[in-house]
Amino acid sequence: MSNHRGICFAARAAHQVILLLLVSALSLTCVSPAAAQKKKKTEPPPSADGSKMLVPLTDEQQIDYLLSEMLGAWQLGDIEKLRQDYADDVVVVNGSWAPPVFGWTNYLAIYQQQRARMQQVRMDRLNTYIKVSGTVGWACFQWDFVGVVDGQETASQGQTTVVLEKRNNHWVIVLNHTSIAPRIPQAAPASAPAGQQPPPKPTPR
Image (cartoon, rainbow, N blue to C red):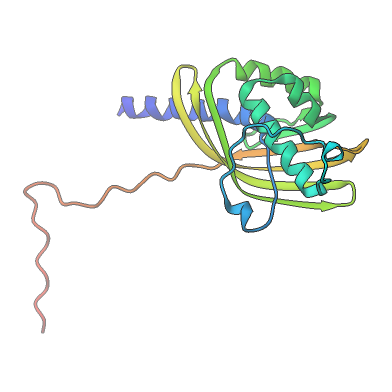
């Protein structure tokens, strides 16, 4: 019994660590509805700046590139790339009972502290949706995380919503809200204890 409690406590602690980290940079979003259902690998694409490409990208495509770049940078610990994708006045909110983090500088301090505790990090996003209205956009997606946290293999799933704003012809994240989905324990199949017979069925009258 105590061993079971210890395992549960360790699992909760690992999830809290991941949540703080995931909250930071979970990146995110859109393409066509059919393509949005595909799991997307998070290696950074060549460039998120649609103005430098031969065929200009739509705002939705620019955001999609930015989010892929951001997740790739988050996994690699590439602070310079992360900095390009976040606004100075970004607000970061996680799913735990903790106050929001205001500003890139404060977010960066938390990210570096938590990222140092993690190795072999991988984050995949799926079921992404992006919407743009003028110079404001928002995106939501699901994610799968695997990695080693404090020496223990950890896996979790969750959802992220971000709000972006187009500033100086470049999209930046101004709000990031991430939460971890609770894992539903699998119910063990019901079976009668050894030697115990099921109760007899009542005889029909």
